[in-house]
Length: 555
Image (cartoon, rainbow, N blue to C red; front, side):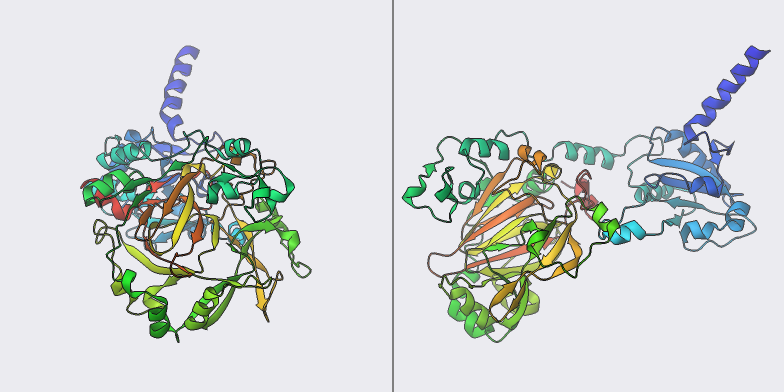
């Protein structure tokens, strides 16, 4: 008799176990779906997507479908099926825990099915993330039918068939993820550069192609003979792929967009009207009286990271909770001073050649052409293979004297960077290297500029989310040991070239002036990205933007 008892209990445990998160829960199984109390549900993981049937259900066929799916999908840990009783939900404050859209309305004392997606962590603001009241959102499942499976997949971010297999779209995405481009397998890491150059100072290697020696005078900003520099003839960085002819749409999407692979199109836009029209005189005469927002810095570096101790923080206190959430509370991202000025004054400023100690370096960065320079948009064109395929979000112009250095960061857009005057050298790191580059929140500070003098006196109550604290030109491997393994990629574009820079690729950008005019001009097209991810998040994976799913079945 005892043997039969244990056999029956084993069968019952086998039936119930797949639906139990913890033995603390005391739900009852009906139709393969565990009935769970509201209080027990509030203890479950926010990283799981839940399909919940209210008991009694209004649609018995929907309940039957959910029961079948709960069995077919039981091998998928990110989706779980439960039942709520209406009485428990109504009497114990269910609306305070779950926000159902549209609001729950009872018909004949029965309820619908709802999908509660996993909670996406609010990574945009540390204070919000710390103080946020956790309340789950949910949507009501439509009537039973084939679209129910699609609805659940869309809500849960999954790609499953009714039988529990991976859908054709899911299989395609998995294949694309395995084929993503990365340079981590290459041998020239930051640590190897540091060792080969016999110096921690890599700035001149990256931007001049030579190594500095360890002599003290070689840390000055000069390349004079006494510096005893040596030519780099023993190794080189991996270079961006280059094309002399524009690809067709099929080739670009399959070989570069789908693979998240940078590529340079040489002389691709040399025919643009911008090349012959955008002279200093033309810009001065056509837009000189336009008021623009200009960034000013006391050095050529823009938006680097430095020690907070350099800043006047007498009246600034970091809340304890924020300080504990920061990986590097001792650092700040330095934002340049922002000033409004006439465009003609900006042009005169970048045309100055003085080396005075108080010289202000000016940068017109990510400035909307449509908002500030009406008409210039007609002098440039989207790449023909992405027009009407990718969704254009921003069209920007960038101008400087050609000496600026934009420090290491990433953008959440797919980017086509088009060089009009001068050249730009970009040092790239692929998104797989975010851990090596210590992606995360960094406190922000901003220069003040008064009467020709810069002041470090504005610590901000905000954080940057896209900057790296690692200075690749002078890496501190003691503070950032994982940076040793970071592998750079060199992409240099000259006048007429276009760089496709996929979303979330890290890049540091050194500008150089035109040989004819003392300026650097570039235009960039920022598109809604094909590959997305949560940020800042070092371990979050890239995922395909659902707005582009139609491309998966076409290319």
